Length: 283
Image (tube, rainbow, N blue to C red; front, side, top):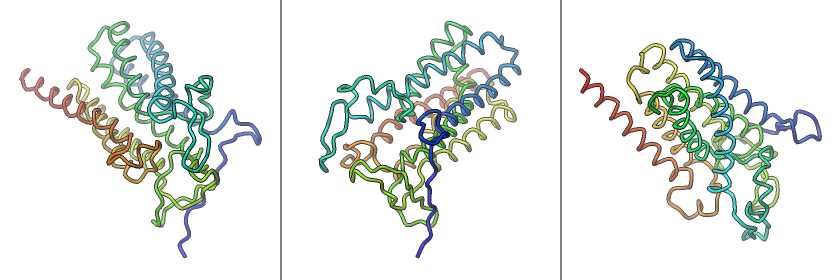
């Protein structure tokens, strides 16, 4: 009989208290590490420290607001729904105050990506007065390391789990609440959160190597294009072993996460093509 990995980690830092919790701690850790990475980059390029302070403010607001609204709009039920099993799922539009309960989980990376992109475009014009691709190239690695810790937070929360499997490294998520069964479900599953976390860590290392060792920052748009292709490309692949997060994912050929990833991948390919084309024209 296979011995799977029993995952019964509690997200609570203090017994009986929902907050503070490990998810929040990991989320903040990712933001702090991302801050130190971008701080080092700004120091190398002699960018004003005041610009860095404003960047942090833009990023924190965009990450939290965008990721939360992304979950509400892309994954959460809009109004109260009764599942086929007869379970009541509270919709965000029926209970709008639930939208603000970030500590209960529910952050979508695609929503965060869209909000961060908008915030950085505004920042590039209003603060540093440079083309948007300039800041996007430099913020790619910090976002990747932030995503690494956010997915570890999802692992701690036993959420965004993978499909059922019999692979030797399958996790038995003891605290995973299956809304379809309306009960805890320790069925062995792919640790999809861990897959994504490791993928983002690799992407972070790749981007740092390209920036510091290959001077990729001199080719405007290249780093950001690599970031989009690798991050959303791995996200697209991992979705094949991830449990669908919406009812429509059970009937669609591609699930919601994959459909939302495709435009980012295509954008990355186009941005890299433009970066090489621009360099060729300058030679």
